[in-house]
Image (cartoon, rainbow, N blue to C red; front, side):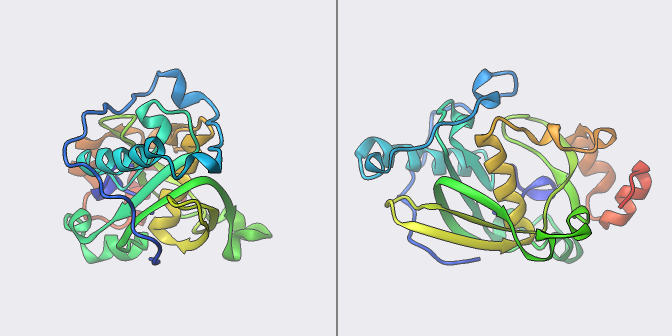
Length: 227
């Protein structure tokens, strides 16, 4: 997922492997079959191997170079259930305080999830409250140059293994929860365009020109979309 107006994933955890500074790996673009396939689970015995550790380091490097706040292995052509996520103040510097607050945007250190399992958490677990999903723009490194409004659950819990093979669980709200949903979708062959309000689909340039700095209620009204 890409940063700034459209970015989506604060809690501690083991430090991620050091990433190389100049990744040569291209990001797979929409239309490639790997983005529409179900990614395969990782055998936990493979996690300590040099090859798998190199994959994690490469994913973090590609995410940072893009730049983005999340990346799934299928986005670099690897059909495995691995995601990496990171957010920091540098990626939020184009947002005003209202935008940061509305989105629940918070900084967090790199996180790696192997074979993640995502569950809806909080007030949206039961009842009609599940329909009240916050809606914001999302972009995707694999749908380069575009953005659309997507409704996501406000709080989720993800369980899986870390980059060392240790079990971990992370329960988060706001933007980290959105990034997690976006990246786990990638592992199931789903893109944000499958979930977006189609009338909001736009180029990132137009979205920035029209909507940057505006509250989400004003954006929705201008597009004729119900909150």
